[in-house]
Length: 248
Image (cartoon, rainbow, N blue to C red; front, side):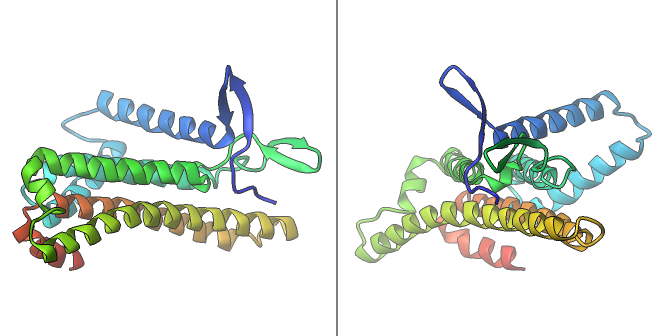
């Protein structure tokens, strides 16, 4: 049975090393290594890896620019970072051995490495980083007066709307974290169940489905973050235009 909470593998003093933390460190090392390799091999005549990276960056930047033209340069780094990190974290759970190689505590298998996205602490942390970065960016671009004016007003109707906006910001964090956690955790349960019944060929369709789900969830999280940033970095009277563009 897969546990909701990550299992502790080791301790450094009072600091707990969990199996989901090890997965996060693995993903970080993959992304950093990839960035260093691409940087080292930059060329006027790009190879396959550079072409793939340039295609990805150009496509995502154009998407960001279509939603928030004037602030695209400041929003895009968050957008692409969230997408790549969450995508690799989601797919890391599909690597053979992740979630299946470990040690027994009684009759329970404790995996050495477990997908970070199946840990609610990780997805909640990502959602909080997304929310904090969005509001800090809003203050930097609009200024503190315009930012506070979105939520507080001497007009009772606008004040009520502002309170609803504050509640909405809280629900965004909950929605982002639980959506990502729920989909990835459910996928792990399905794969574990099907593999325990018939380990050969039968889990393959579910594995392919999880590849798609991992991609979609990474895209949804990063695009929602990008859209929230575009809305909160836009003056209040222009917000409706941004919302209409994001729906398209």
